[in-house]
Image 1: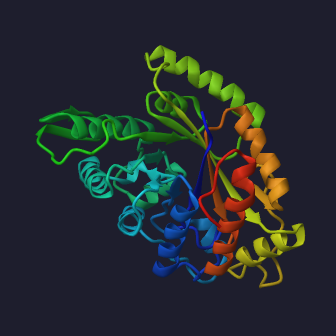
Image 2: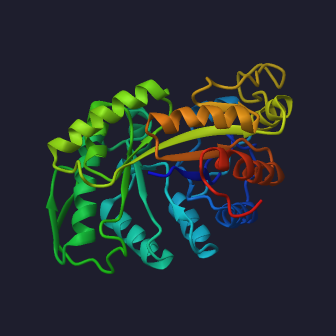
Length: 340
């Protein structure tokens, strides 16, 4: 299977991979159009509902967090080919009947370009902070029930599903998605999430090294045999945070500019932080040659889709990196770019 190369949308990445205040509607439109013109496979937005506590502790200025589904709708309207894969929708935060309508409508309006990426979300404590009415939410059970409800709503003329967290009786919900089934990718490395992924169309991974990915793929293969889906197509999608430039020094400088020292409460002021990149397997900082060689290890391990999410302090550095990656890294991985 040929490797697919995707890239990120910074809708909820301020304070993480993008400088706070640097993300705009115009910038996301330019990024989406550029990625499509260069031959990227998909755009990956992400989801945070409120400021994540580590970002709030690091920076005094709050980040802008643009709604994921609205952002997907916006960029779908200004593109025609590129797919949209949220990495990830925090499924327990979304009422399934409403989510089914939003995604079915978006799949119709985009011409069948939606893949639903789902995850469990952050800590249970964070979930209770947002939804205090549930003292002991079983988010795993919520994910299972929500997925079953979504699939029923997308397929059945009169959808019925009854569980602890969702109950639907004879719901007639049209239009259905263009795609049958609408693809679902599941993120997570725990056994329960891997079993959910095995019953879907793909698995999203964030931090494992190639040898660990190989063993996990073997585990997924066993789970897929258990549910009788071993002969169906299945994607292994790996996300990377990347700062790429012609020289190592430029790549490190770009990373430092996108993630400046902290200035939030208790940070010790603007001089108290460090711009040292996170571990290598989460973040790739360097030249096209170095980054391409490392990504090739993941392709050899069985990854079928790589998402390059660029550290950027502004729109110009996003564009430079998007073009450089397409011009030099994509061909090295056997993917033809359609322009530079």
